Length: 137
Image (tube, rainbow, N blue to C red; front, side, top):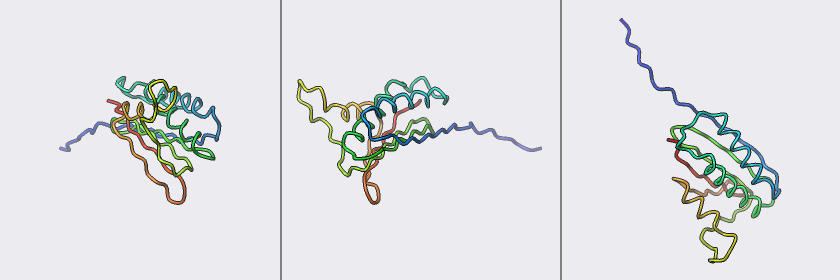
């Protein structure tokens, strides 16, 4: 007699996009993220709107402070959505610099509130990668 164990299958999905150095890239990134999430089974606990907000803020920063295209990577695995945005600027994102009447400067603070993890790593050569993790389940 042979025993069979059935491990619960983990679903993993990954997508990577190169976005142009353009002010509309954040809008395109939102749409790409929505399409990615529509095509991948995920828990209702993951808010697509929150994921799209995180992505658009990170891509907006990358295109505002970088000088070339940026790379967006999305990965769902092990109960999380990992968002990585790479750009060619060595400057680290600054949060909390907005005044009470300012219309700008709150994006990184929002990203930190919506994510479980926020990390910035310098890339070999040039640039940086901003990595965030959102809970799926």
